[in-house]
Length: 488
Ligand code: BG6
Image 1 (tube, protein in one colour):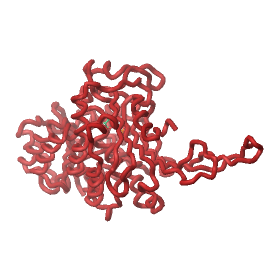
Image 2 (cartoon, protein in one colour):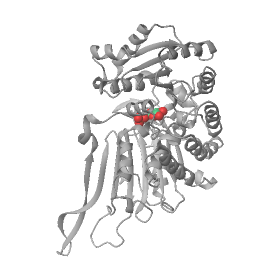
Image 3 (spheres, helix red, strand yellow):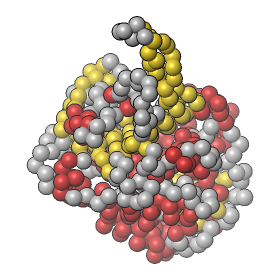
Image 4 (cartoon, rainbow, N blue to C red):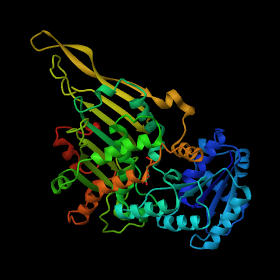
């Protein structure tokens, strides 16, 4: 099968940080279909050779294990071409159409790795030049809009020119092996299903912590913030994977239908819950990896009076028979105490205690997403006998855990998120991509939070870089009698 992959934004950050390295890995692993061509699109005047040279130099910044040798790059570079385009000009699109026609590949992927403000123009122009026929696939990177209305506007334009099954909306969390395993855990094994409900689960925590700050993306982050950057997409997709009903089969729409139902069942916000159940934070100066780091307000491209949040913690519920009353806590932030993404399922304690369990009385399933990738099942076992005060023997239970490390088990067979997703686009598999109605529903749910913040004079709470966020986040969960996993 021949394919052309056109990368709009072919000289940009995403292209060289994620897309090119992922395509190279697929090439190295022999999974990139033969007969492919990767066409970088950019504004600058460059020959194919100069573009290859630029990409080769950028690979020097990629981690060592993922860097090509000179010989490997020379073979990979044979796939690379460059087309200069002014994305606002019709002639540019005609030139692209001509380039594509010369080869007439079986599949053409249009990867829009540009500023989202350009999506509408690009879609219109592609269609105007006949580049929207069924063998053409459109890949849209997040952020897709900044609220419900702008998201709808993009989806509306896209729908005018492309069928839904041609559109691949990326949420790279869905491509992570650890997230794939979450689906496998739930729908490939019968063990947990009977327990996966309100009768047995006390609460669920989804935590995506990053130790990095905003890096060079201050200007982008200023208009985005953690809620739009991480919660509206990645965290809610994780929540869907945890809470959805088993789909009737593994086809894309069956899975997306179930995820959509979860999003629709999220408890609606009220003025009280917006006050009590959402915490926004912003990092101030502190440390990272033992070194002093500046606060958010001192970062390049950031307004010194900015109220943009770099941290969000929230509590919600899912109003359906399986989950009614079970709190779901979501937390994400930059410059936290470490890079650690995990989902913690806290089971209810035994209904009647016959052992002395101290304060470690319940079971826990921990789904480690990164940097560790695996499962831990926390149980209680009888590790020691102690002498009770009156001389009688008392049985004390101690926490132990079963630890399954997927990296150790599957090691080199594992495929990175972008590699997996790019191969899925080329092969036309939509399972791991987000449908427009899911995205709109997620925006509908986060929008009241954005509106509330816009009119809330309190602003974000500050937390020192290198900590777990503002204390209000711990207070929020403590109100229910629980604590974040690292506090237990
Ligand atoms: C991106 C966000 O979608 O995800 C970034 O825009 C964030 O701000 C990144 O750092 C986190 O991805 P990962 O794969 O490193 O957890």
